[in-house]
Image (cartoon, rainbow, N blue to C red):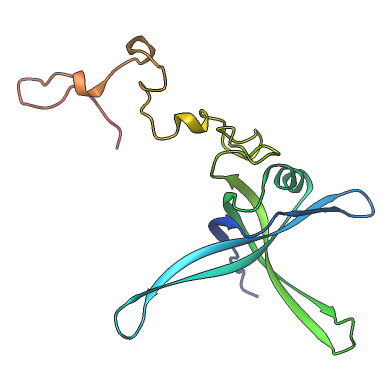
Length: 173
């Protein structure tokens, strides 16, 4: 049988607060829904907007972090795989199927929220990005945030040019 490839990358906002639960053997799992916006052109050439609501599940320490730090509206980037499961309906109507994304990694994209909903300017450590400032600093340049000229090894705008008019900087991109 041929080997397949199942990889999903989603970026969106939580549609509601995550539901953190524990199995009988005390293993954490969390379920939340990510709202992913998209647009398309209709037959008249006008842009239309839509939103997909995608269920996501995470397990173990990742589930603990998601349950602790994510709230409705949090921006996330999720890497995982599609899972399809089946179960018997409680009303006896037969077999039902559910599809969701099993998260392998969750990156907290926006600023961390406190319990009161105030931005704290970063995200917790672990599988998330490090804190980079606070909400009052958002949108400010590095120098406006209080870093001085001595804090940077080089300002590329201050570099001179050689005799051929080429910049002295070797930028690796």
